[in-house]
Length: 185
Image (tube, rainbow, N blue to C red; front, side):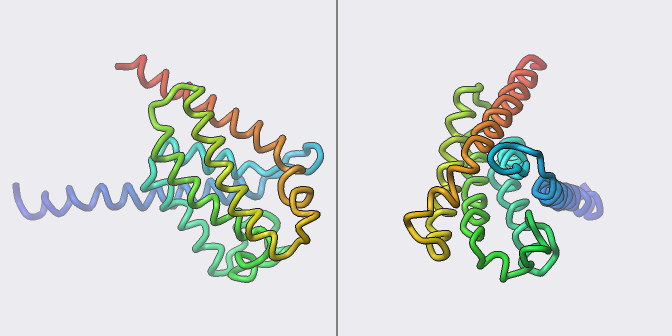
């Protein structure tokens, strides 16, 4: 094997990783900007996108995509839901929803690590647990901004129904892809 072919073989996985990470961060950005009318609040699709990407890409690339998304937002690009209207950059990350964003970072690793190859019930369980991590981190941070008597009404109950639906859809898509992949073998 020549030095040139050895260098090329090492370049391909690196570019592949970078491309998947950037595509993942772009998908998260787009899904955060999409608002679907829902009751009691409109829902964005970033929960589904993060969980789907993490399940398909695995923990390393899922976390890398989420870190890229957070880093891009921290630099001031309006990638977050409600930005630039509700702020940009580090101010947005330090704002009331910052805990949820960091919860998604942890959740992306959990989903990427545990959801691969599982059936629907397994995916659903892993994604519900990851959603729990998002809510714990988000509510803990939101408590700095909202009185405790209003915390669940401000940061959980309006979003729970939509998030449960998005998680069920993501688990269905991942388990369906896993079954399809298994049928090809």
